[in-house]
Length: 464
Image (cartoon, rainbow, N blue to C red; front, side, top):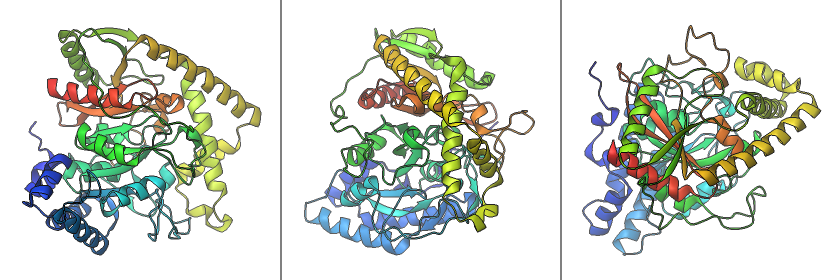
């Protein structure tokens, strides 16, 4: 079957990465204004075809681009991403922009301040093209919502791009911007990255500050999505660091993202090949196995593993996630509850039914699992796995039709455990299925070793 990379339809300006753009800005051969204009036009095309945006902000983007152009002309850019087109998931605060959360039940009140990651991107001179789609409050791993409808996959518009950062993934895959801010509470960066053939990383918890705190608690991370590990690293470098508004951050700096070197020769790699719930699609498994074979040829020592507490992970995560959903829905006006996504209503009802002692027990089991994961990553330099057990399926469906599954958590078993344990984990593209659906490979590192994950991802992509 012949399939076309969705980036093929984008203009040359929309295909450039951070390093190429900023080199051209410095040389005066490109202007942030013309690049922003090209990306805004591409965003409008993508919106019509795939519904990736809740806001395309021409006026603000061009104003920011003109300011970036002036800084580059003066030889004083604000950062290594000054003038680079960027999108923000419509669940993260952007000052004076009505954040929709994918909900018609919540009042879209414009926040008076940026979220910390957005403030750092703004100070670095990023050009904000607009806001990208999300399911209601980011509750599920596909992207449709009562507010914005269904977002579709640019590789095949009948398929889902995954979620909850699905709009960001579509924008990245199609060239509607270079840098894309997502969030990941159970796979919401890595799943859509896998389904759309882009790169996304869930950083070590606390590397990127978050405010206000997620109702889903400390399983939720903020991180970058892009078309390459290098672009994601540039974005992550800007967003990382301590912010006093995020009490859950550690009060010390995590290891630097700079200067990491990693080679697979002689490296001990754990191959996590069995999901805690459900099976792996044979085509997905074949693509991952091919990468494993290639890394073995590079001298990696790869050992099949299961995660600690394998049989308990589904219950531990769903207890946390359903309780968070109940808390978020409880904050809505009672007269608007009937406007909430029915799936979210059901999950919130299940969360309300969880006894307090069961929730406390789940947190204790999570702590034990996290400690065991830290120990496992003392043995192995990295873990490797499918990013998702399946490839993209029908748009607008929470689970593959005819699968017999009930909730997204039942097919997302390679992502949510790493939210529980808070290690850095990325999804990188490793080929297509026979009918042209992208497959993602996941790399997981020790807490704090985000640079190792990024460097290893660059190496894998150079080998496959």
